[in-house]
Image (cartoon, rainbow, N blue to C red):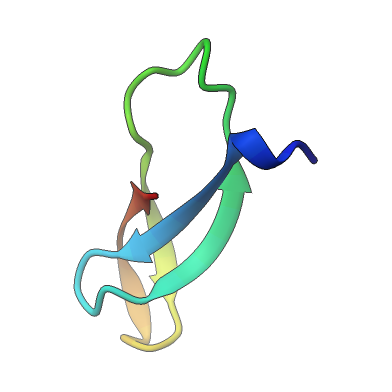
Length: 51
């Protein structure tokens, strides 16, 4: 997995980084925002891409 394509997904509610993923930055210009499960909040929340 190339290092330059790695992204971190942070919970919008508790601001903890729960997931790591990758994306092709040449084809997808916008930051990812996904509905994922947060084990700290114990519910599904929005997760936004961070640095």
